[in-house]
Amino acid sequence: MSQRDLVAELRAARVEAPPQVRERIRLIAAEAPAPPRRFTWRRALVVAVPVAAAVAAAVVLTRPSPHGQTSAVREQRLAHGAATRTRQPGALAVPSTPKRAVVVGESLSLRVTDISGSVKRAVQVAVSLGGYATSVHATTQGAQGSADLTLRVPRAHVQEAVTRLAQLGTITAEQLDVTDRQAGLNATDRLIARLQQQLAALREQHAGAARIAALTARIEALQRSEAATRRSAHYATIRLHLATPAPPVRARHHHGPLHGVGVALRWLGIGAVYALAVGVPVAAVLALLWLAARTLRRRREDALLSRR
Amino acid sequence: MTFQQAAEAHLDDVYGYLAWFTGDRFAAEELTSVTFERALRLWHRFDPARGSARTWLCQVARTVALDHFRSERRRLRREQLAAPPEAVDFRFAEGLSPDLEAALARLTAGEREVVALRVLLDLDAGSAARILGISPTNCTTRLNRALKKLQEALHVAA
Image 1: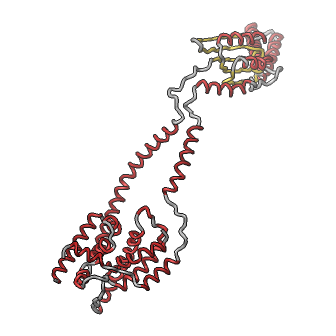
Image 2: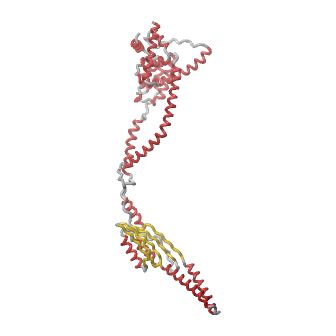
Image 3: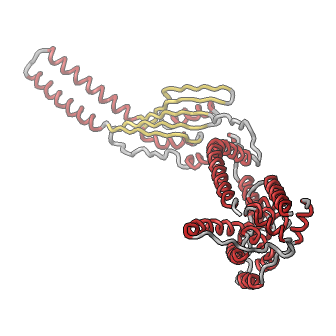
């Protein structure tokens, strides 16, 4: 018999399940519940992909790019933020103690647009309040420049001076130093009074002219020192730093609305490289284990099915 | 396709496959029931996109049959210690010549399985290979060897 005839005879054979088996299977099949709505990855992807795309597009299009703004915009923001401070110039208030000897030092940094004009107005402010400028250093280069001024203003008008100076531009930094020298002056007064008593006593005793002259010189030195301290306390020192805004630096690259997508893809690439570096050896080991298990299973099956 | 429809359409295929595979009608009847009970439990996993219901049911039937063979092997080992097993007289199908029945009985279970799948159920090489867990080429090789063995047995009988 040829192989074709053999196959034809085998195919002609009919194998039908016995009726009792058919009935049993019918009973089993009757227990089958109604088919539930099947979850498939394809159905899930049909929903998930458009949703993810919409979310990604919304994020990319609405997210402001941090590199897309020019420095000019940032400067405007700073100026806006600083303007709120300009409305309260000299937030550090100078304590009002006119009868005590207090040394006041104020440092003020301002951002101005015109250096030379601001320097002139600052000096005018000091002079109008009875003060004067002890030093002025100004440097300009094109539209850029800076200036450092040291102003002496009567302590009674220092708050007003700071307020008027702050109006020259926007405050970028402010520092106030207050030192009370009254205690030292009181001690000096007491010392001078004691020395003067000693001097009077020496004169009554007709002491040596040299001792009297030395004591007199010490008293005069103390009086000069006291006078100097009172003078310095009479005037407050205002160190003013003026500077023009830094030139707006254009961003090197103007990022488009799809910049976020590029960044995301870059990070995805980095993640993929790491995943490959870790995943390939693990996958290789798993594949080897799977192959070994499959070979073992097939051998067992072959051994099982090799009997008649 | 519902489970009822699949069971109705492929009951004879599953029974024939198991009958030829095991070479035991009573075992085939029992295993057919077990197969459909298990298939009912696993029906939610059946994906028509990955293969026909017949192929899937045959895969379930094969798992059931392999479990049966394993338990049978253990049982035979125990019984052989007491008494040798009796030979089972079985007709594989209606319409086969006695010589062909005898030749089929001389095949191993693995050889009868591939003949059942490729010839009796007329599955293509890919579907049969998927059930067997081997490549289509390997499946075709196994079929050719089994048919050659059948031919030789028939030749000897003639």
